[in-house]
Image 1 (cartoon, helix red, strand yellow):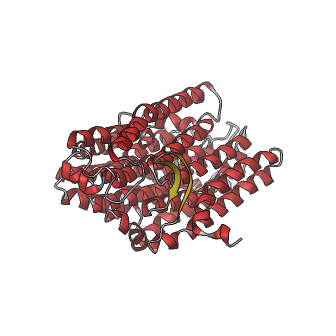
Image 2: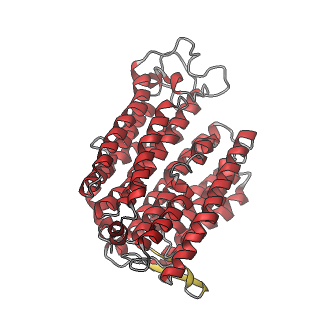
Length: 507
């Protein structure tokens, strides 16, 4: 028993636990309480397992586990470095609240194929842990692809023509970019460096000229399609046809976060900060990421559908992480890593709120939300908190990531980037707080039929004029907890930066 609790075994357990859950969940296909109980138990066990690995990483003794050598110099292996530790902590913790929310959402809608949903969700979390803890490019690529495949049934959950069309785009773009760009970049790196193992300072340092570094960086940046770097971002808004808990998975817990995490990890441990910034091979990506930040914010401002606006907001916010990596400085990497955590908690809150609004009122358009803050005050207060964190207003977690990114851009001499960050924050205010303003300060629209009566949804709670009509508690409690998390993260900055310090220093 003691041997099973060794840190190296716990690394492997972080992938085995959700995979075992995926095997057990179908056994209780016709017994929903037991099926969802398995999901919750697995989520709690995974979270406890990942958190138990934190002390070793903080002490400078990162646990690792080598599974098998596939080819000479190419192994399936895991090792937890600070960046992966942070990503693993965020994903495993949010799986718990997303699972509780999923139960409330899926039951409220009597969604079909719930067993398949929970199975794929568990496999997606196992894949996410594999990405977070990968020791080398081979392992990273393997779990990156498994994450794409396991989330495809979630994107196509509704099985209607729109969902299937979005699913084909999702699969085609993510698999296409990884096979045509990401995989060749890995092979080229192996040829140049003689290894795929991540190493402090970068395995390509001193082994490739500027032109080669530019080409490889482009292959990685566009080959990692989950990072949604423009113009390869359009799969993400299209995937919004999925149920809201899936959107939360895509935007906050796993998929896109896995993408930008891969970009940051590859910049840090494949290229190396000094090698990349010293060669100037990073400059084009700095400007592209900056353009994505502002461009996607402008598109978000023009969208009238709530989930579509949040989707383009995600494209913009992901570019902050890419920008942090592209700056190739300690402060930039720290800002990008913080953005992974801060955006995850803020954006999952916003998607939880969007889903709660849909459950209670069956409304999807922003223009329909006038006065809704009076009947759904808890949901809209959480939406306000999540929005302020995304914007970067203290005392909320998103403040720190934007602060470090602005400092890094200024120190690196990219003053135009600092200006773009300020413009983006103003656009964030415009496209997020305008929703909150509608909800709390405008009267309900005259054509409103009591927030969704007559549509078969949203009045199960017994709507009455002037009362509070929130979504089920299984939805309201998770969104309240993640909103609280936005505040907690602000005050945990010292602990988070202490964890990330070795990575930011290039160690």
